[in-house]
Image (cartoon, rainbow, N blue to C red; front, side):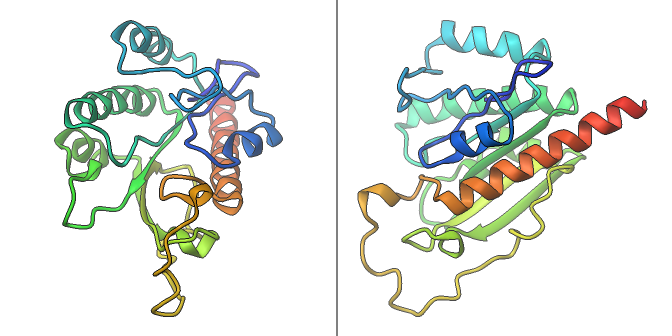
Length: 208
């Protein structure tokens, strides 16, 4: 999730090669995820308090969030509130940040319908990006939405929709390509956008 001020960076990732690509771009990666080798449970108030303190203090330069698409109702609300709190702090500090989640489909509860996330989306310096994951190698169509700082450039990704045959995604995705996992291509795109956004912000701060 983000990175310490100076030469240390970190990011939150949900599967796939995103941590490796971030390391490739020179980031020191810190994964805040139960599925990580050393799992971190942000539902735990004490653990989250430690993370939030660093974020609010401006210790992280880059933050990337991807909350579970299907979490128990109580946990989902806590995760949503804490995602908002972290990203609102990043927004206030003009950091490089982003939030990724499945696009709303009208049938299931969606992170994007949560009042706090909708409020975050309405702030200035915030951009919404929509695309289908299958265009980046995912086994299913995977409609996805991003909410990012406006200096993080995902223009090549926005509006990228499925162009496969009608039956292309009827087969169930393999265990290694579940809906929330990042394919190598998507991981590279996200890491590059965050890196370029971070560099842009660094140059602008130097000019102040």
